[in-house]
Length: 123
Ligand SMILES: [Zn+2]
Image (cartoon, rainbow, N blue to C red):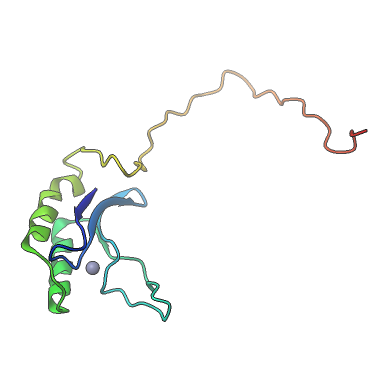
């Protein structure tokens, strides 16, 4: 779920996503991350588990002269409840990393299927 996208007065692209199972707001394609000579980012894009963490990151963008509209802050703060886990809104477009499947105990010892001998049986 995107908070704000590039364009329309925005030099930042923020999304809500999961990192190692934790809810984070990520500065996707962050222009503060140094690029190598092929233009590839040299580090992971910054991600924050709190809205305030992201807001201070947005301040860094502004200090660097990037355009960060006020609505980027507003929408980040709106996602605060989700980041803190108080809002169970699913993201929809991002698969949840939380364990959703119940491990079923097997009724008995797993029977090994008799497998066909490998190779050598072709005429
Ligand atoms: Zn950034």
